[in-house]
Length: 213
Image 1 (cartoon, rainbow, N blue to C red):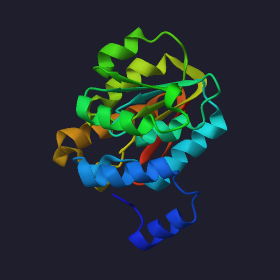
Image 2: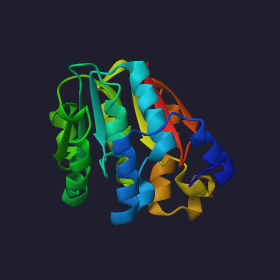
Image 3: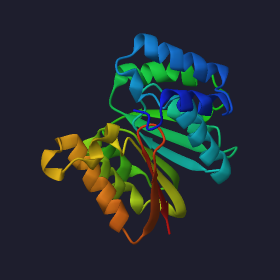
């Protein structure tokens, strides 16, 4: 869901740096061949992720939820020369689709796709993380947050997608479905967490940006 009308959204894209050829093809192929293409980060959000990564110059990015690899490629554009991005997903089919496009990029050697349950895999990571991007099953957002916060460097970022959930996040709590309630609880916890500073930006379906103090 976009929180501005289509005309303004189109204007923003026209005045934003373009996708690479590989990302443009990945965008089109995802919409043609993969279920739920709205899950793709897309042009505007993808350029935002790339922009943040290039400003930060991370050595290690953790992505929770690969889908077709669009966000992983965008985030990897800002990695240091020896940097790496690990993207975790349980879906073998979409991960294979993602790998077919990642292999065409200049950052292919920096991206590792891991087929695993993130809740089991994250505890095995020992090196400090610069950026975490969470875009997986909504009911576990808070669990993922708890798993990564102590592994995140001071000054590091957590970016969580879909935190406005097509506007349903403003419903009365008593009327929320399980996914909306889980996102609400995540947003509320982050807001009250004294270890971080945070903001929600209404880009696409809402991004929670969290900086560890």
